[in-house]
Amino acid sequence: MKIVVCAKFVPDATADRRFRPEDNTVDRAGVDGLLSELDEYAVETALTVKEAAGDPGDTVVTVLTVGPEQAADAVKKGLQMGADAGVHVLDDAIHGSDAVATSLILAKALAKLEADLVVFGMGSTDGSMGVVPAMVSERLGLPAVTLGSDVTVDGQTVRIRRDGDTASDTIEGTLPLVLSVSDQANEPRYPSFKGIMAAKKKPVETWSLADLELSADQVGGSAAWTEVVEVTARPPRTAGTIVTDDDSGPAGSGAHQLVEFLSTNKFL
Amino acid sequence: MSNVLVLVDHTDGQVRKTTAELLTIARRLGDPVAVFVGDGVQDALPALGQYGATKVVALTNPELTQFLVAPKAEALQQVAAKVEPAAILISSNAEGKEIAARLAVKLESGLITDAVDVQEGAVTTQSVFAGNYTVQAKVTHGTPIITVKPNAATPEAAETSPEVEEFDVTISDAAKTARITDSKPREATGRPELTEAAIIVSGGRGTGGDFGPVEAFADSLGAAVGASRAAVDSGWYPHAYQVGQTGKTVSPQLYVAAGISGAIQHRAGMQTSKTIVAVNKDEEAPIFELVDFGVVGDLHKVLPAATEEVIKRKS
Ligand SMILES: Cc1cc2nc3c(=O)[nH]c(=O)nc-3n(C[C@H](O)[C@H](O)[C@H](O)COP(=O)(O)OP(=O)(O)OC[C@H]3O[C@@H](n4cnc5c(N)ncnc54)[C@H](O)[C@@H]3O)c2cc1C
Image (cartoon, rainbow over all chains, first blue to last red; front, side):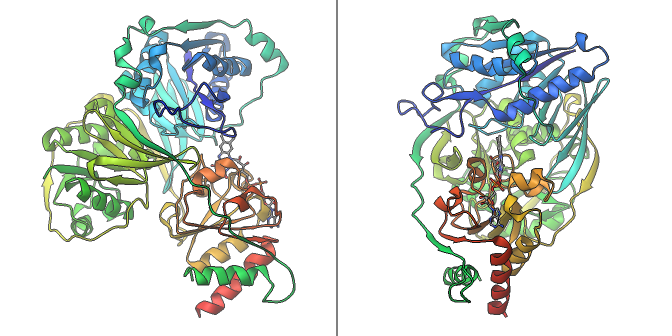
C-alpha cells in the first residue's frame, strides 16, 4: 500500500506571524517555520496504519509537501518521525497559490505517486481553512472521510469516528481514499535519535511544476481566484481592570466586583 | 436583482440561527434563494420567509443525506447552473466548508471561508493568525463561494412568502462513496449552542477537573460552557466544547475564562469576543493581557460567590 501524507510548512504560531507588505501573502520566508503541528497527527496515523499492516514492508509512507525552499524541513520532520520517503514540490511560480491552486498541485503529485491512502491533518495552523482535503478528493474523484478522531483501516475499508457538533458519527469509505484526522486522533511520536539519523539517508525527490505537467500560469498569485484587498493588524486590546480577590468581605471581594462589572455592562 | 444562493442549515426543518444570518447577509448582495436539503421544508418555510428568502429550492433526493457531503456539492452545482447566482453562501462548519470546497473546484470559482462579515460587492472580512489580523478579501474568478461564521450578522426580519420549488438532482456514483454508518446524537445540555451563544463561560486546567462551578456560573448567566484543550485532553469535558484553534472559534458578547492561561491556540478561538473576563490565580497569566475585567483569585471561591450574587440580583 502507498500512503502519502500531505504536510505543510507553516510560520511558527508562537513567533510573530505576518503578511508580506508587497503582495499581502503570508510571509513564509522571513519568519521561522515548521511542519504544521496538525500534520504531525497525519504522519502518526500513517505510521500506525503501516505498523498495523500484515506486512509493514509492503507499505510505503511518503511525506509530500508543496512550498518554498525551507519547506524541506517539513518533509525532514516527517522522515525523522518514521516516514520512508519524501517529495517536495518546489517552484518559484507556486508562491501566492490559493487553496484551489494548491489542491491542483497536490492532486497531480498524488496521482503521480499512485497513492492508495492520502492522509491530511485537520487544517493548517496558518491558513486554517481546512478545505484542501475535500478539494483534492474532488479532483482525484476519490472518496473522502474527514476529521477522524479515531481511525481504523480494515482491509480495504477505512472507518473513522467523527465527533461533530450534534453527533458522534461513524463514517466509512473504501480505498483508495482521502482521509483527514483531527488532533484527537493520536499522540504524535517524537523523532528518536535513531530516527533522526536514519532520516538523513531516506530518499527525497524535488519536483517542479513541469514534472507534474502543470504550467506556471495555472498556479501562484496571478492564478489565484481570491484576492486580499486589505490587511489590518488588530489593535491591541485596551488594558482592562484587574482586581485581586481577598477575604475582606463583599466590598473587597473579587466575586462582588466581578458581578458589579457584569451588571454595569448589562450582562445580567 | 441577481439571485444569491443560501444553503439552509437545519435539523428536520428546524432552521438554525446561522441561516437567518446568511439570509440577512444575502440581501446585501441580491435576492436570497434558499436551498433546502432533506425533509421538513414546510416546517422551515416560515423562518425562511421571515428573513427574506424570495424562493425556496427543495431537494429531497434521499441520497443527499445518506452519504457525506459529495452529493450535496453535486446538487448545489446543478442548482447553480440553473439559477446562475451572484454568490453562494454556506455556514462555516465542517460540513459547510467541505461542500464549499468541492463546489469551488466544480464551478471553477474562488472560495473564501470563515467570513465574519460580508458587505456589498461580496467583500468579506476574516480574522486570521489567532485574531491578530483582520483581512478583507474578495473572489476574483467565477461565482463567489463564501462560508460565513456564526454571529457574522444580526438577523433582520424582512417578511416574504416564498414559493417552494422541488428540484430534481442526479447524483453520480462517484459521489456515493463515503457513508455514515452510525450516528450517536450528543446529549442535549439545555444550554445555548456554543458558537451561537451571547455569553460563554469556559474552564481550563485550573478547574482541577471539577466543572461544577463553571457550569453553575454559566447557568446563572444563561451562558454556554466551553473548555480549554488542557481540560478536554484531561477528559474533564467533551471535545465538542473545546474553544480554540482546533476547537470552536467563538465571538460572544461576553467570554469568561476561568482557570485558563491564555495560550495562543486558545486565544485563536476567543480573541474576537466583545468583552473578555478572566478568573485566574496567577496574576502573570497571559489571559490578563486580553481582559476587560480580571480577577486574580481562586476560581473555586470566586465563581460560586459570583454565582450566588448573580442569582440574588436577578431574583
Ligand atoms: C496544534 C495545537 C492546537 C491547539 N489547540 C488548542 C485549542 O483549540 N484550544 C485550547 O484551549 N488549547 C489548544 N492548544 C493547547 C494550548 O497550547 C494550551 O496548552 C492550552 O490552551 C492550555 O490550557 P489551559 O489554559 O486550561 O491550561 P494551563 O496553560 O495549564 O493553564 C491553567 C491556568 O489555570 C490557572 N489556575 C490553576 N488553578 C487555578 C485556580 N484554582 N483558580 C484559578 N486559576 C487557576 C493557572 O494559573 C493557569 O494560568 C493547542 C496546542 C497545539 C500545539
